[in-house]
Image (tube, rainbow, N blue to C red; front, side, top):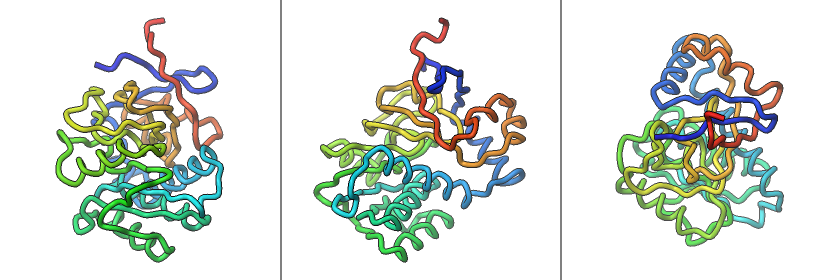
Length: 246
């Protein structure tokens, strides 16, 4: 079971959630309080693109960024990040596990990515300078199979840095278990609140990103303290406290 708690770069405790709690936060936001799925995806993608620019300062027009995307919201967030990077001169290729099964909002983000000049390929290129892992989010349902397994294997075989969105693909957001293949990330940008499973070192360095969830939503799920996490910032570095009883 997970063995840590999380603190920000100012030493403040940051509450963590399991997959069921995060699903309820998303449900309330989409059906009641807002923001809607498109807005959350846009906020996630822009934060991720900004993190890339800040973490890897270089001329990305000369480097190849490969986004590995699933069919759900996690994949859509990765595609959105790719589009923002293309808009700022990046050379970005997206590879989707199954484009025909993408959700409506994620599919629309892929359409916009193409219109911005991004490349969509059936297979990942032989080499990348940065891999963005957006294959599977917090709703992992078992061992990754088929294309998801192949893209996770690709990410782990690359010498390039790997940046995961929300949680490394293949890592259980609640139990920290890996029922099959899982991405070994250099860093993970997690969304709204850290997931308990991010105690795992598979996640690498941790950053928490604001996707616009209002305080009322957190109160509805019994987490009112979550509303003050960002304190005027859109991204907050996190550290694992490996001795949570201290």
